[in-house]
Image (cartoon, rainbow, N blue to C red; front, top):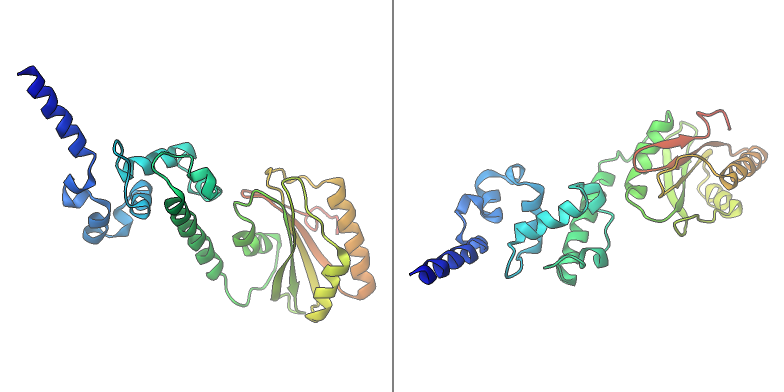
Length: 241
């Protein structure tokens, strides 16, 4: 008799792990249809992306474990690579690619919301404008923003991409691109994946060199921003330009 009860309890537990046995309003896909996307938790949305769990975990359980590993921070989740995600049980390459792709679409949506004609009036404008390109990166990148005489953005362009410790920015390439676009001024931007906004000696030297070259070419460098996910350093605000 006791064995039958135990078998019954085990069967009930296994059944609870199958999302199909849940009440319709609790299943992620059905819940979205019934109550709308805003009603779903982050874990439930990720569960829809991955589709299925493991023999012992539902898709929602797997999603919760992934989120727990990044402190339930979607910004941290966006930093994970396909290989990072595949370290979690129940996440193969296809599921990892699906998660990475969804988060990249979210990042691009942020970028698309930036107005086509953005006027730069302060360092905060620069930070917000370039954020879609540099947010969540684990390596350094160097970008330039080219402006017209009204300080409206003409173009933003990647100059170089490097490792965790640094990247190379060639003044000749930067000014060549600015002259080709007939820009009136330049803004320099690069990120520090470490989160440290303090400029290095190399950052200071490059900024000085770029400022002097810009003055000679009548193509002023208006600012150099050191970008981190949560803060930034402006050479112009600090009186270094």
